[in-house]
Length: 106
Image 1 (cartoon, rainbow, N blue to C red):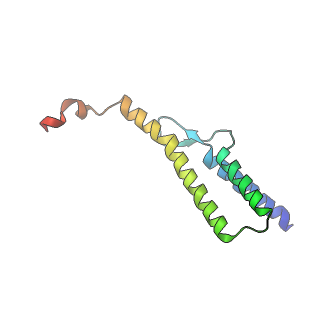
Image 2 (image 1 turned 90 degrees about the vertical axis):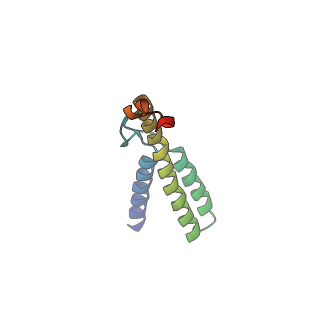
Image 3 (image 1 turned 180 degrees about the horizontal axis):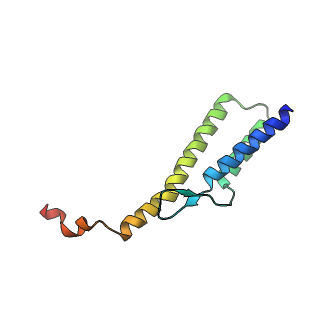
């Protein structure tokens, strides 16, 4: 029973992490849009942890650092996906005051 529960929890965690690392942008908003693809970053981390666990249980520091790296990857992926959309929207539609008041006369 405990093995099935642990496997179920691990599978749910992997699916959630994959969703967080493989979303796209619902342009022109800041909202993420789920995409049906696998995250290469997550696959590399899971493979590395699997290879490390062959030598015995993982140390607490390894788990903490892995969590920090994955949280950073999620944040950077969000920025990587949404910032270009925001920049494209502002570049395509510049504010009107920028065209009327030059900086050297302000």
